[in-house]
Image (tube, rainbow, N blue to C red; front, side, top):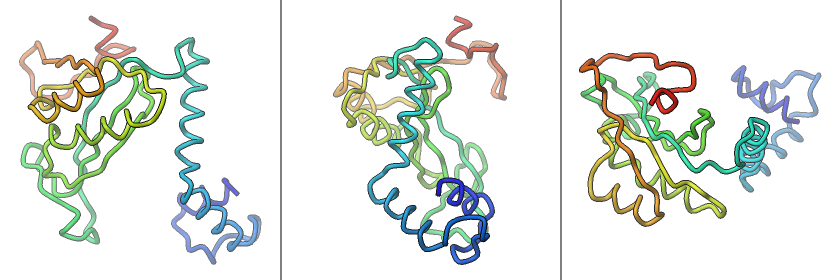
Length: 186
């Protein structure tokens, strides 16, 4: 069933056009709807993430994370109501706001129009992640876009400390950090 859903997503086919190698399309569709309704995909991902962290010799739940965003162009078919213009990146589309652990594993993601400032989307991103039971996040590294009273209030409510990482070389372009990331180079 999982392979059938992955095939559908990867190839963009209609449910009724599933190859005969997979179970009957209606059974796959019903399976997918149940998983989506009960958020089983998130639960599966959470279990896999925890397992990967433990195999790497870390605690299952991270105590430190990184928040950042990425603006991406929207296709021509994306409606005006769900896209915006990010003047800083010259992108007309959407923005992904992500929270990862220090291993780079995804903890939470929020998608907004590209014109939403990072500091406006981050409180909801943090709230969504921290509202789940058993969260141990205590430190989050951010860039200088993540500042302001609403964001500080959200972090304080959960006892999470932020550390703003500033570029020390004066550049404005992308620079690859050593293996392990900038937090290991400090």
